[in-house]
Image (cartoon, rainbow, N blue to C red; front, side):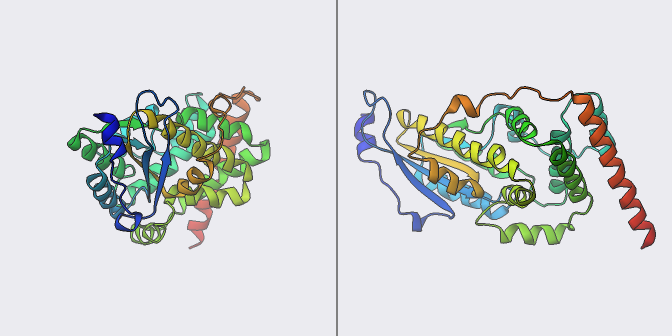
Length: 298
């Protein structure tokens, strides 16, 4: 019986499994359907690391979960079937911003991530594709557990002041234009096994732009915690594959009440978009001119 299986589920010692790993327990809210605690193995990955992909395989095969949760949302589902990551040109991104098809932050942010991915041996999101394959192999259900990207980016843009918007857009552009070469980037990412490349980048930007941390990290930690706890009524063993930078936040919020309605609310538009398109285009132009001048001097 399902209740007996849950009661006799083996909890593997964390020191026998890949790290970084959080092992958490939760009782289902509705205990009429299943008895006993659910066990959650939350694995932190570096997002673009071959070692992280191997860790996903090891963990899923060891604990054989009924559900595997991924740090993805419905809007990022195409990551699971992508065979390569297209890198748009900066002029294409500027056109998207100018015509209103994307926000300045989303356009520049996506461009920078695609540029990073083009320098790496492992395509961003490979650990999620590996987790999907392993889940299917054992008949486990796959759940997308992250907040919608459009909501996250809208809340980021709303949280920033006008000057922060200008500075952040310029910083993202400059970062994308002055990336390390492929080998240097690979070595730096492998060093960040205890966190993950994307979260580390967010934290670095967060030192100068503190408004980023709440919508990009803290609220998403809360959202994934909420989604994980909901699974307690459906499975006695769950594996979650998330960026390692989210592990501590999920631990911290595990026993706390979460206002899911507040953190999934789309913020009202405070400024007319054309103003920000103009600001971003001027910033982009300044960065490009500056870059060209630097290269001419070399």
